[in-house]
Image 1 (cartoon, rainbow, N blue to C red):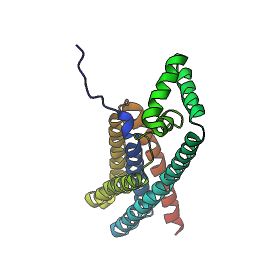
Image 2: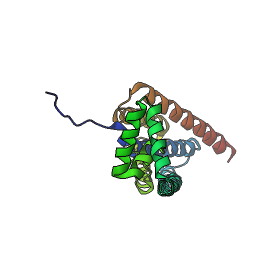
Image 3: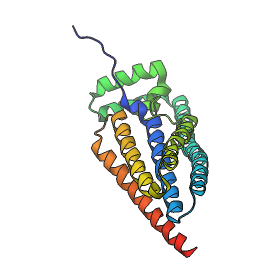
Length: 231
């Protein structure tokens, strides 16, 4: 006798996980880059902290607004598709039932069985069946603008706080290497956590986020040093 077990659906994490990883990594990279750029120009710790805090606040607000607008656009498209599908179901339910059956046939289901499945699913909830199998819209993957916005803003703030903490804790003469090394370590940890939360191997995501973070920080540090000499 087989036992029923609850399966872990990792795909359900896609929405918030993407926003969370993006927000946290952007917070670390952008704030650390700002700090390194300003520190390379040989300014005081107070100026460095002020720049980092301004970057945290502005970045969190920008991430929230951008994520909300972006995901809202996706949500608007989903609602438009569902409204059109609802009209088509009302105008020609027979055609829509056959259309759904042909989707199952294309997936390998026998034609007669596909038509019976289509008939039964549409008898229960025709719109949900078409939204899921024709449009690819389901409860798991549907766009959630507010959730994405809050997740991005919150995780950006957490990520940005990490290099700011390093500024406070490191000696002023060691600030550059401490912020750089510490931020890269945070990025590597974030890449590993994000990969594990999504059920993926941790090596490639960790290398990927660390490499691009190092490149961004290196470029801004060089620009900051050059600007400091000019000024």
